[in-house]
Amino acid sequence: MFLQNLTDSSTIYETISARTFADSQIQNCILDGTAIRGAGWNSVHMRDSNANDVQFTDSQFVSSNISRSSLMNTSFTGCRWEQLAFSGVTLIKTHWAGIRSNRSSVVQCTMQRCSITDSIFTNALFSDFEGIFASAENDIFYAARFEITCGGGMNGFSGAELKNCLFYGCTFSGFPLRGASLVNCAFIHCSGEITDDCESSAVYGVPRICPPPPGTAIAYREQAQNILTTYRTHNL
Image: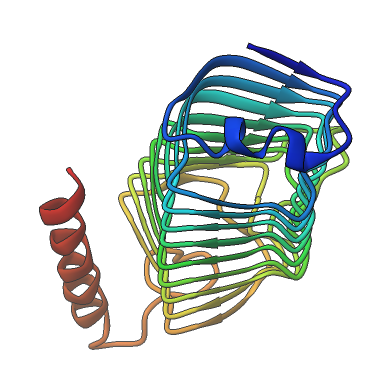
């Protein structure tokens, strides 16, 4: 199905909110202000479109991509992302809550004031993104990659606050957490250039910035292991 140049979201609401919406393209359309629950997007490709102030709830996105589009103030709640790719997308003030993501990517996107809570990202890619004043809380990043490349003009999570987050087996390049505020975060078996300048409190696993005080390393390690055990039980 090919949806193009549609400016009234009500005309395509039933299509895009269906439990099975597959092998389709959305181009130069306006989806603003819609509330979509229980949708199933499979091999859907959306580009050059507006989906601002949209509420996606309990929906699934499989092998789909969203490019060169605006999703300002849009929320994803209780959604599952399986190989969902965001490329060149405006994600300012978006809200991600309870996301379960596998092999998804965020590339060359603006994420200012984006909030990410209670979510799990497995094998995710965050590349050349701008997340100033973004926030992440109670999230797990498993085998994810965060990178800022030279000349991309993006600053990663500079100015963002990351709280109660676990990074396990992640790789970092270009200091994507430079200038971030890290609170109660653990980095286990991570490698690369995590950050060279940040505010930190009760952070384990970034010895260059915040070596653990004597006697606390084991406690942080055990706490992180408990979080990871819960993650493996429910998501692997």
